[in-house]
Amino acid sequence: MAAAVADVQAFPFQMPRGKTLMTSDDALDQFRHIARERAFGRHVGSDRLIQAGLDALIAGVESPSLAMLAGLLRSEEPEAPELFDQVLEELGLLFHAPAEPRAAKWALAYWIAGQIADGSLDPAAGTHLIWADIAYDLGYPEELQPLVQCAHDLDSWEESWGVSVEELNGEAVEAAKQFLSRRSAAEAGD
Image (cartoon, rainbow, N blue to C red; front, top):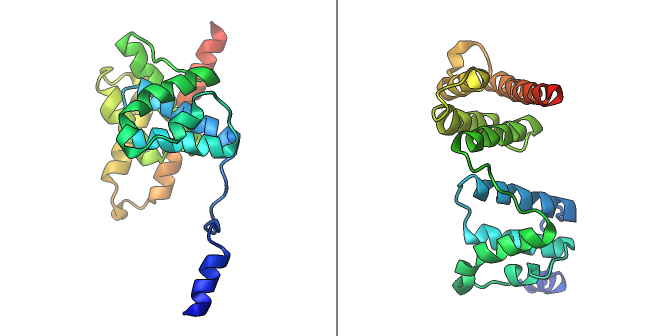
């Protein structure tokens, strides 16, 4: 018992194994991601905003208001959204979704597809969001049909199909990449 206590006292701040420290680029990416979530109307709790501030501060990101955001106490959580936006502005990361509802839905679809394609969002979760939250509101446009089909397949998958979930996830990633490439091709043609 005494040896265990000595070990705890000798290394009181030891990092958990398997965890890596966040870089400043990672922290800024986290800020961008949360900014988009909020701009697209997703609820982001004050605890996440404060944690993002703390992560950024530890990673060496500098901003006049960052330490205030990172140091908010539980009783001060209502101040977090305003401080988070202030930090975003100071870092030049403020994001506004398009004001027109259809354009905002399309922007959300591209953002989600980008996350599916880069592996930062589970394909089943991402395609389900596109199916349930975007395609319906846009009247199920042809451009989203491959992603909607992937969502349907992943949602109703059964082992008896003779295809693995991993294969269906791969199809969803490919559908997201195709969706994004058609946008890039269309923009290049403008």
